[in-house]
Length: 443
Image 1 (cartoon, rainbow, N blue to C red):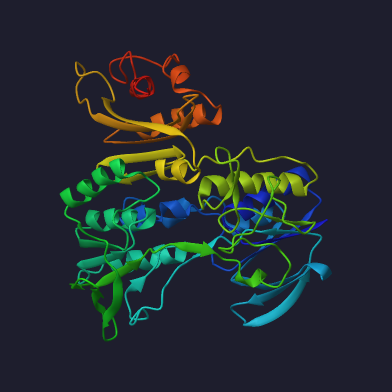
Image 2 (cartoon, rainbow, N blue to C red):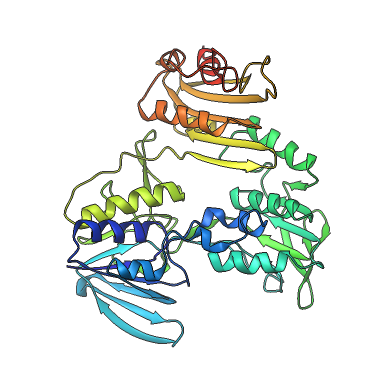
């Protein structure tokens, strides 16, 4: 049996590795458009900032290591067409600029996403960059460390934009974030994002919210960004407006795609065409609380679903239990974490819900260095079942969100979680932990 994997970062290499472990005699061929396999792209902002000084630390396994496992990997090779009726793919060798055909028995599509770049006037000027691949990170770090780069404009206030803003503040740059909507990090609710915005401003960032970029100004390199409200000096621009599934090459193949281009799969990672699987940021994923497919491009989902795809390609019938969209981000001196439904998602699903937003602390005040934790819960009103949780604070936040993720995964109510036997010792938590206090505040 021959498996071709299109895309060799998270989901693709998880699938390839799982299949090879279960079926050592299978032939596995990977085509990767970029120059690296199996790396943690979420670490890129911390490489740019210098907090990680070696990009190879982000690489889980190298091409040589995969080859020793019996996985053939071809870097700088882009699949440009899939022909399911012939079980063929058309591949472009980017270095040689040559096309060739390869055949498969089973196919795994794991091409991830590509960054959205609107056709702004001047967008092709020098020093306007995205941050998606390891190559992007290496290049951005080289530019950011130049002494003449002082004024940095971030277009987009999502996860990557905010992480890069923090990286640039760490490097001593003047940072401005321009965001079209009225607040940043919109997967979080406003109680949390208000505090994150205050933290960025406290550390010297300028926030231009509800502002639309209209053009980039300059000669060879960008010199300024013009919006509908003003013009701002810029030596470097990072575009982080959002991403779309990298699936344009599948159009006309018969493989079912959602309206945003994401591959439609079932909980076994199967597409609508037998023998073709997909997972990762290019595909939809089943949401455990929503009980339907959605688009949540996260490395956690990609690795789990890739592993399941590999097992199922080997003949199993494993189903993904479902994502909760659990995610975290560091914003200067604050941790933010979230899991399950946000309030806006609960509203969109017409759920009869209630919310609480409470302040507690990471440990008792009689032990040194107590810090506050703010927690928001979204619960089903009748049953008091926890549907979502968000939190923010200087420390101890994200691991508590993990507790809420386990509770939501197991459909626990606030009353049940409010009495769970959690650890207590003054250096770590109170006799009533922040998790208890938030859960017991639900009315």
